Image (cartoon, rainbow, N blue to C red; front, side, top):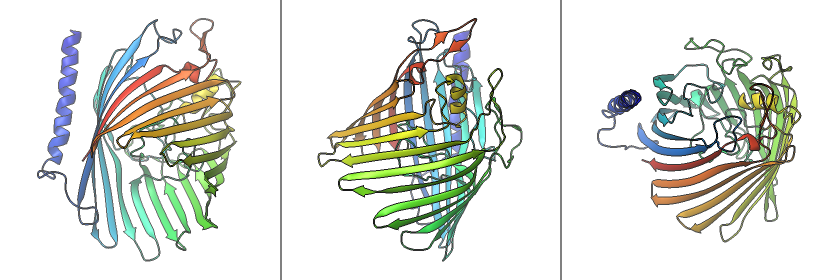
Length: 437
């Protein structure tokens, strides 16, 4: 019966993929073509990811010797163009298909709902314990080009900050510090007005609509196609300029859960690239930590990053950053875990070091090692990876995510005490094939 059920899930998932492709074929019957500077440009990417999650070192969470496997495919189809000199558009449709072993229950939420999205543009085609398929609209926006400014309206990707691991100024769905796949940043719903005042200076004004997320990690009104609240939305202003070769930025306004003011500077001192960012967050009254813990999920805090980097002539590159994470609580790791899952803190601890080293062994072969260390609980995260370019538009990447530190301990009943941040993570081994067309 299990085999029959799995076969039925696979058939439904593949049927969903076929339907997705069918609706695109009439547009792209002669292949992906065009030019984004003309009326229509069509591009896309296809990714296959296979992973093994080894939790055998964490017997308090799972059975001894357990390992789980997953296969994921992600198809992204992109249309953009400039039908008029004063108008551009961008559309990204994404289809995801996942098969997983029993230990990775896909009905259990792996993270909280996405912030800064007021429109429900996701649709589950299949949702089973060991298989899922979904289609979503990741970007849909129009850019109006005026002589004095550009106005972008709709779902769009917004990126601020120049640091690699941590960007306090990048408040709109920033990449995770250990995330390797940074090809496409998720879009948020709203408008962005860019006003240049010189060759290297200008203002950005953003109004982003978003839903409020409960302490359970779900939308407060999940059945509404459109929903937004002041708590979950953002109104942010930013000024940037260049002074004596140094890029400066200041920003302030309302973001998810409160108010932020911050700034950043990027430049060079001799052979070193220097990066500094800092932001202070003032929290509004919002969801509380679940009982029996006390306190709010979002708290007042200061976040600051200082980084140095250098690329040698032989292609060897080193990036190092120190993070002061004011929202971390190393004395209450369980509360920090909840805040981390909600995006209310970057890490469990307050003092974090990140180091990246990469080297091109061959023009088509890149090796990289990431090390993130928490001074607060003396745990580490290692992430070796190897990327191979198989063709002009085909890449293969092998990587592992290895957490080292004190393991969780079993408390009374089924209660688990965390002893460190990275020591609580399983080992993850990943193989990813990326095809761009």
